[in-house]
Length: 147
Image (cartoon, rainbow, N blue to C red; front, side, top):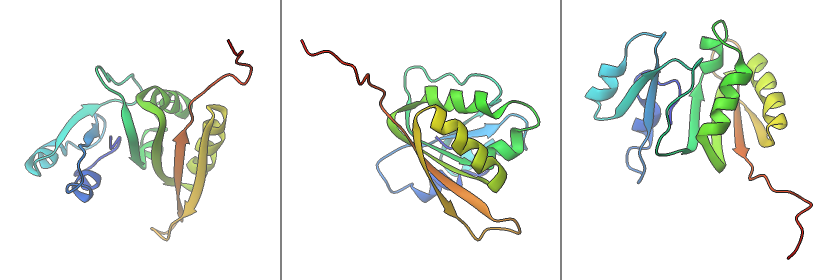
């Protein structure tokens, strides 16, 4: 899932791979969904301050490019991250491209959700952005009794 697509660029980059990408255009951004459809891709509008209907599936990979920067004035980042945790399958990945400020905050919250994250620097734009590559871990009790 590309959680903050503009023109479906992430989906277009992996078009030859045997997978599909749900392109999500923010309902508070410019309406670029017709461009996504013109490229032969699938997509929908969504307000990330609300829950996303995932029935009947969850996702193996979430891609975000500037979602928290764009939506931070509307809703609390921790709630969006909890929604991401619900949407993402165990052992799934989130690739998050954000400003240094949001990358640090996301990393802190992700640790509390038992995600493992690593940071990569970019040379993009005036302010250096960070790319976080996070993996949702499968929770299990360390006190499992043997039967």
